[in-house]
Picture 1: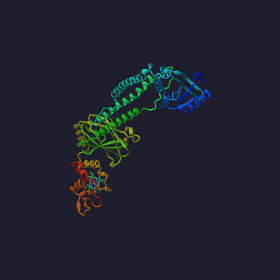
Picture 2: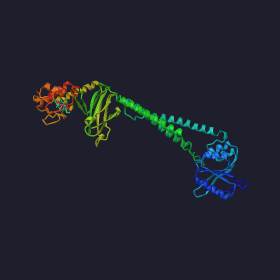
Picture 3: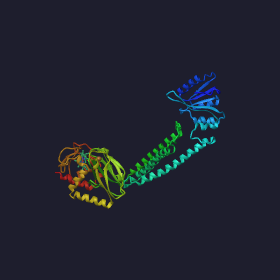
Picture 4: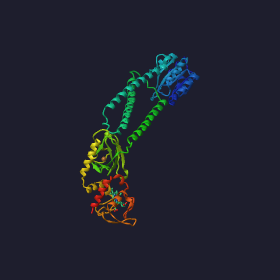
Length: 472
Ligand code: HEC
Ligand SMILES: [Cu+2]
């Protein structure tokens, strides 16, 4: 360092947040200048620099070139506001111990910008802050327009690429509305990120010869609050829409057609308890709600017809029956597939789903019933099997939860109340529709389901009785 001997400094202000910088420089200056009147002060923050400049009036200010905590821009502002020329040095300490003096000069306020050579500042002092704000406003306007255009473009593409198959059920409507909204949000967020990124890359690129570091930004509270509160609001709104849509897909029609869906490795079976039909194809009348009661025989499967959008797991276990409501709105042939990995043939676990008119459905029911036959005994056996009677009653005399049906008809029975009855048609009918009325000795009341009066058509109950009578 080589100070001008004819202008010895009396008050030197060293501005750096790095204590090593200040100490090293102070020692060096005292050794070199040997000026007994020399006073050196060290400050570590912007505020301190500014207050010392105003109150202590140093005649040399040494700024740490590498210190981002000392803002040269603010320093400059303060300096421009004053009217004293000031000696400033811009110094950098290298790790090798070398001192690099970038600049050292007496500055008049008018020269200040030139000296600091901060490219962001305008050439004319008086314009400095407003001009900067105006030009960043310009960037925001351009970016805003670009984001809007980009969002529109991507949303247009997303909504015109057939990402989803046709929507073929009433339950698909609220779900597709949600999908649309999500597509819009995806487009907006994607544009927001990519446009800001791309614009910054292009517009704020280092120009050749521009060696300055970028501005040091420590935080921005308003920005952080905005980008927390707005997404939070959006997420809460989506949660609200999600629950509304869920309720919509579950809206119950009391007239719904019940279909029991049984999943197993690897097949689907569809039972129509109202008709006593069991089928490998799910046939549904159009525009009529079907109430699916889903269950599994082995592992967890999942019932999914993509055109209907809604999906429901099927779980093994009597008391884990799940419900799904479907109102098909389009005639046609679809496919149910398993949407839960369930073993080696999971990928092939598909069954046809046919949506037909009510007339076609009635015809299908007639055909199925005709296939079962007209023999009451044979039909009774089907109803007994479909309704799960045979899981509690054996037909070969072997013991089970309930009394065996073999040889039951005509038997003389002792009941738990001590009375003795002969098993005839009337007894069997009462036993099925009102099981607790007469409990045979050795069996507990309340075990046999009390629901059959309501769930099995009377004609079918009579045919079950014919079947029981045939088991001699
Ligand atoms: C969960 C087991 C269970 C199921 C399912 C079941 N039952 Fe029963 N059933 C019983 C038991 C236990 C009894 C004896 C106690 C009673 O009568 O309540 C019985 C009694 C009967 C009797 C009288 C038998 C006798 O010896 O007096 C008839 C008839 C009968 N069931 C028919 C049916 C029919 C038809 C179905 C299907 C639609 C059916 N049960 C389903 C458990 C069952
Ligand atoms: Cu499966």
